Image (cartoon, rainbow, N blue to C red; front, side):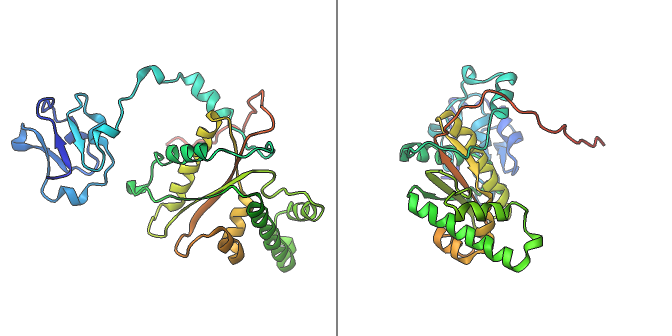
Length: 273
């Protein structure tokens, strides 16, 4: 049996699935029959699930994207434009967290949600490393500071102007690298994923937006990312394997404060052609 599974009692032979398939590998048998894969189509399919999602009659299933695991879209859960804008604009980078751990179930839930982010060729290549041990997170922060010190020693004029401030704060016992985050998540993708950095970024974006609805705050850990790129010690401590050039860390925890307003941003620069 091939990848495509057709319920002939429900199929209307309307050809919607054939026109929707991005790989153009579904046809109607005999031109007006039931849908089927073209010859060799199984090997070309990227398991995107468009055929299952687009059929209005629930007539199609797919071995890799079964209809049983593809729930119907519930119109009553749709949000308005105003709700969407406020939701997106109210996202903040949270750096001050409560002294409270994050439940493993919530972290698992966030990663489960993030796996639905789009990825190049639908490869779904993103992998996750989750740190919940405060000592390990502080160790990563310390190694990041040591990486910053080395950069300062080599070329002080070429480093960002805030490096000395962060190093000085660390020396006085203040961590402005991972702050008080109880969780550090590192998303990564292997070299074979040619759009790996985009895939990682999209997955983390899904995760951080979903985190707000679970009462959590997030912040992209840019300093740790820099250290992951430039420090073998940080990569080893994090556990990033060779052949994983695409990665980014994110801090997660329960925020200390709530925000009451939506700050303005620069006007978009648009070139219409």
